[in-house]
Image 1 (cartoon, one colour):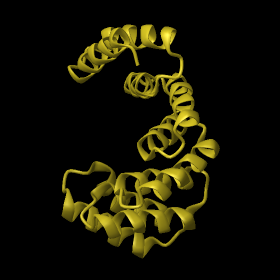
Image 2 (tube, one colour):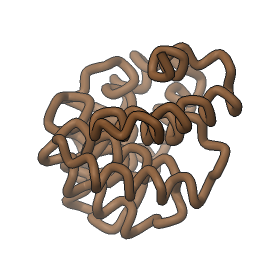
Image 3 (cartoon, helix red, strand yellow):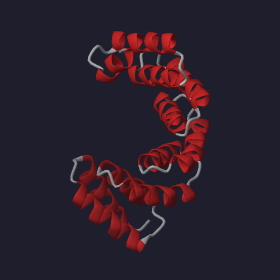
Image 4 (cartoon, one colour):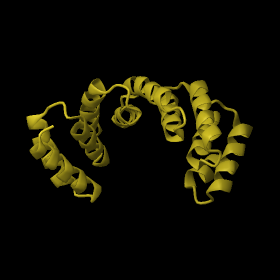
Length: 182
């Protein structure tokens, strides 16, 4: 990469890290005008768009990044989340699968995979994937909470209550856990 492009990319990364998304966005788009396949620029633009709740545009940038580097667990995870957040759970599922295959020790990736499966009504799969997250991080309140909610969907109420209580033991201020317990 030429030094000028490298400097623009570095400036964009610094702006992104300091929360100046507008400046980062402009710099990254300039980088992409010169090098349309610049992986860091595509990935960071995807993250910026996701943080601004523009999930479809985030997914577009992240999909471009994933085509360039399909074996990057972070890109796959972020793409799956952007797709799911944009309502495209079916396409998200494939990228969740890749993300956990590439980084099987990431409890957040398993949690997100479970949420997407649950959104699609694949409750038994979701239970397995929440279980994977919990095997990696037993005190993961959000995974406990989601596993309980999924058990509720399956009408396994006693187990669901136990998971709601477990989530509350980890974090007593989880309003959703109180609601699920009720």
